[in-house]
Amino acid sequence: MAYPKLADRKRSAFAEDVRLGLTRTPQKELPSKYLYDDLGSALFDAITVLPEYGVTRAEERVLTTHANELARLVPETTLVAELGSGSGRKTRRILEALSARRRITYCPIEISPAALAHCEQALGDLARVDVAGYQYEYLDGLKRVVEERRRDGERLLVMFLGSTIGNFRRLAAAHFLRDIRHLMRPGDALILGADLLKPEPVLVGAYDDAAGVTAAFNLNLLGRLNRELGANFDLRQFAHEARFDPVAGAIEMHLRSKRDQAVRIEAAGCTINFAEGETIWTEASHKYTLEDVAYMGDVAGFSWTAQWTDAEWPFADTLFAAR
Image (tube, rainbow, N blue to C red; front, top):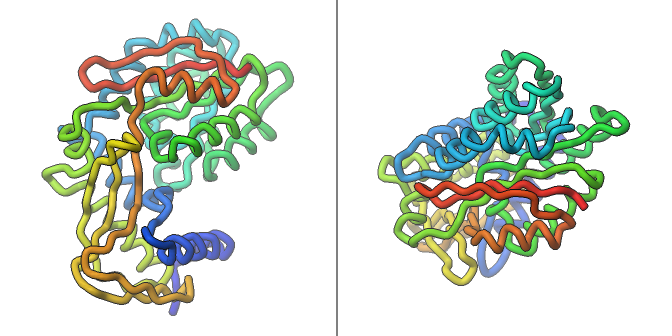
């Protein structure tokens, strides 16, 4: 079977992650990072403007209101790296505020080539901002930015916006922030976005919208396996589900099999059996309290500097300094 052009190493890692995830017991799962191919990224951009999903608008309000204050708190910053930049829409106001003081270099790090190209184009018109994109996963991209772009004595601002930190399990989130800290120097800054706890019906609605865009986003993951790994998923035989786990404080996205079925994944060298009602866990989005966010930063090696919240849709952007 002929597959679309994909670097052999990346396809091999993708196939192995899929094989391990779908043979896991008792819960099949797939890493959420694979939701974001070009189509998945476009669908996620559509999700961000849905009435049920208030995260992006909340953070845009926070950053628009407090960008100048943020720039004053990190006055020496000349290098900015953003993990998972997407289209860069939320980032513009911060870059404008930072570049009003001095010329800066902005390095968006994004696994989707289409999203990265869109970001570079959308922000390329900013005066006194040099844009240099990196198509890598988060830590690999940040490591390259530090190695290739950072000059002696230069201050770094790492941006991890949206609610992506919530995709990590609680302990893994703290470990991930610690890994970021290891690539930074004392005095560097991190701005971290985190979605806050809300009533369960609001949270479920945000991940199961009436128009079905989130369902299409979730099901596209199976479509990606068909396109890139030679799988034969029948997307009509799977349904999107969103559920809230009150113990973990997380919304989970699942794909539920509508019947007993077997799916072959050629590139992974396996056939996966599904029972009717069995699910694939594709994403968890943990929701936090303000105290949770501060504690998570502290144990990762950061000191709390400032925190801004949105009242309309509870959300927080927190500025930390690397200790």
